Image (cartoon, rainbow, N blue to C red; front, side):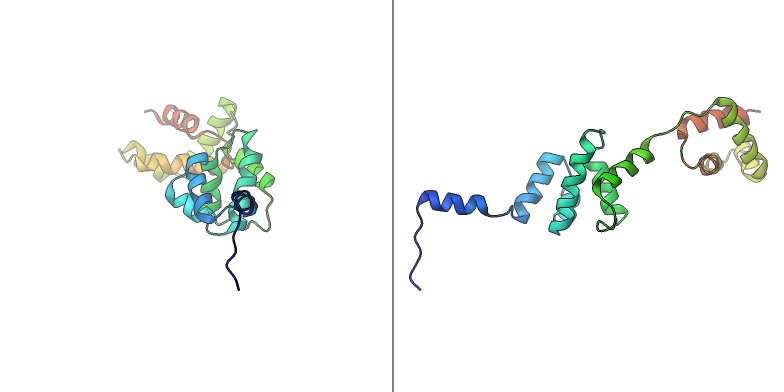
Length: 163
């Protein structure tokens, strides 16, 4: 087969028609989305995952969901991208990050319930064990299905547990 010769214009046209190469995509993810090398490497291993990520980033832009938040979910939760649309992923992230402001009376009621169900943790905290406070915060969060802000719960718990 004889060697092929292309004009500059033909070469440029061929280059423009080629899909983005994995290394180029990797570098772009780092620069454009401000991802670390680890995240970019994992997200660009497979074309389907990279495309899903980019689609999710587009969907998340209008809701102020960051590329890093999306990358964390995709990587850490090993999301099945075949079963969940990028828009649904964004909706889940928004729901997870939105914390509801609970009425202080309602919050105190739940804290009293959790405190009465966990007297050992209350006693441990009052005895100086700080880890018990974290446990109680977790129990209140569980009661509220994770919809309350942890700082609000902690402040309310501290007021309730004051001697």
